[in-house]
Amino acid sequence: IIIGYLLFFVFGSILPGRAPVPVQLAMLCVEAFIIGFGQTLFYMITTINMANTIEYNEYKTGSRDEAIIFSLRPFMAKLGSALQQVIITVTYILIGMIAITNSISEIENNSAMDIIDESTKASQIADVLNKASPNMAVWLRVCMVVLPIALFLASFFVMRYKVKIDEKTYENMLNKIEARRIETPEE
Image (cartoon, rainbow, N blue to C red; front, side):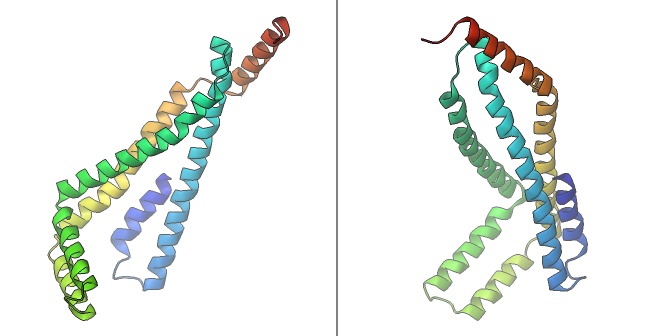
């Protein structure tokens, strides 16, 4: 994930205007693949760890609450999406992007209502984008790269140092759960 984001940052700063568009698009696809592949692996590991908590809960309490534990997954996904939108909105406000996105949205609306034609729309959007400061682009790129890397590293370290269920512990838990079931058979 980190490699993908760093490539995105470096090539987003170096390649625009210096490489042909197909090369830029190819690099963007490679970067997106690396980021997406890494995130998919990480989410898969978190899902497996969440599934392991079912056995951990049964090991600690004697109760197997799969429905409750697995209902957390969609809740966490929704909460994550909401936090993502808050972070994007705050970032846009802090770097001054809101004015630009609102202006482009207004131009798009005028075009959709046939108030302006396509060439006027393209010209007006180019004017709005040219008013953006170079600092704004740098800060946007930093927020698109540094913030996800920082959040990923935080979640990685939490999982690395706070999740105590490894293969040996998991096997031990399963053995103790099975021993309890043998001692007290269900009716």
